[in-house]
Length: 526
Image 1: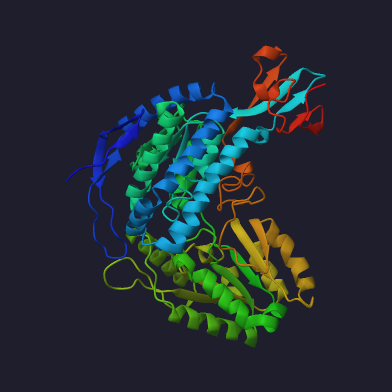
Image 2 (image 1 turned 60 degrees about the vertical axis):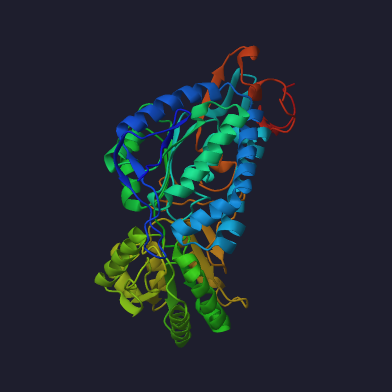
C-alpha cells in the first residue's frame, strides 16, 4: 500500500517516519485508501531548517507579494472546491452542504483574503513613531510558526489553511503545518494548493510545509526548538497544556484554544416570557454539527421553577427526536463517553443518552444531564469537565445568590451568554451576574446562543485559561489575530534609509494608520 509523502523544503518527499496510520470514514468505519506517515524528529528538524531559511527571505519581500500569495491560494481552493468537499465529507462525516461547501470553505477563503488586505494596508503592525526621541517601532515577523490543526474545522482552523495559518503568513512568517490524523487527506490537498500558490507567487519554497502526524515527544521537542518562532494550537486541553508547558519553558509564544463549556444563563423572566422558544433555540444550538463546535453550549444555568422543568422537558424531546450524529472519529466518541462518565461520577443525573451508539461508524447518543446548584458547588472542577459533542449539563439553582456562586466557580471560557426578558424584570439579576461572567469569558452574549464565530475585526475567539493559553489575543478576527505572530521591532536613532518602509517619514501607501508623536495618522511625518 502506498504511503503519502510529506512536504518539506519545497518538495513532496517520503517521510523519515516512525510508523504509519490510515484514515477512516466515520460514517461507515471503512478505512480509506493509502497510508500516512508518522514523522520522526528527522522530518521536523529538516522542516525547521528550511523554515528558518525561508523566514530570512520573507522578511525582505514587499507586502504585495505576500498578499498575492494569500489571494492566489484562496482562488486555488475555490477552483478545487468540488473534489475537496467530497474528500472532506468522506473523512469527517460533515455534510457537504451547507456545512463544507457553503459555510466553512467560503469562510476559509474569506479569512485568507482578509489577511491579504491587512498585509497591503499595514496598520495591523502598529507602526509607532516618536520624533522627539528618535524612536520608531513596528511589529515584524517572529519566525517559523508551527500550526496544529484541530479535528472539528478541517478548513477554517486547518494548520495548512485556517485562521492561524493565514495570520502567521500575513505577519511574514513561514508555517509548518501539523495536520490532523482524522482528515489527513484534506490537509494534504490544502497543502498541495498552498504550495502551488507559493510557486506561482515566488515565495520561498519552504513558506508552507506539512507533516501529517508526530509522536507526542516529537511535538514537545518541536515547540521548544530554538528555531521555532511561535505556535498556534487548537485541540484538547490535555495535549495543549503539555505542549504549552514545553513552549513556556523556553519562552516560545504558544497561542492555544483548549477547552470551553460556554455557560448560558436563562434568567427567570426570560423563561416565563418565551420558555418554549428558548428551549428550541438551545436544543438546536446544542445539536448543531453534532455538538462538535468549540462554542457549543455545554453548561446551562436555570432557576428552579415549573418553567425550568418545562424547558427541560422540551429540550429532552428535541434531543430524543434528533438522530445521533456522525462524529468526527473514534477518538471523539471515546472522549465524549469519558466526559459524560466523569460528569456522572461527579453526581450529574442522566436525563437522556449517555452512551455510544452500537453499529458501524462513530456515533454517540444525544446526552443531557442535570445537577442542582448545591451539587455543582460541592464539586465545581469535576462538573466542568468538557464533554465534546452533543452533551450539555443543566445546573438548577435555587436563587440569585446560588447562581452568583456557580458563576464565581467557573473556569475561563470562550463565550458566556445571558438571556433576559424584554420587560425588564431580569435587569437587576443581570446587573449582579454580568460582572461575574464577563471576567470569565472572551465573548459575552445577550439573548443569543454562542454557536458560530463571525470572521470580523471585532470578534474575540479567545478567553481566560483554559479556554485559551493567553487571554489578550484572539484566534479569529483580523488584524488582532495577526499580531500574535509579530515581534516588536524597535529602531533607535536608525538612519532613514535603513528603516522599514512602514516607519519612514512618508506613509508608504497613504492608507496605513500610524501613531506619530501620540496622534493616529494616515499622513506623513511632518
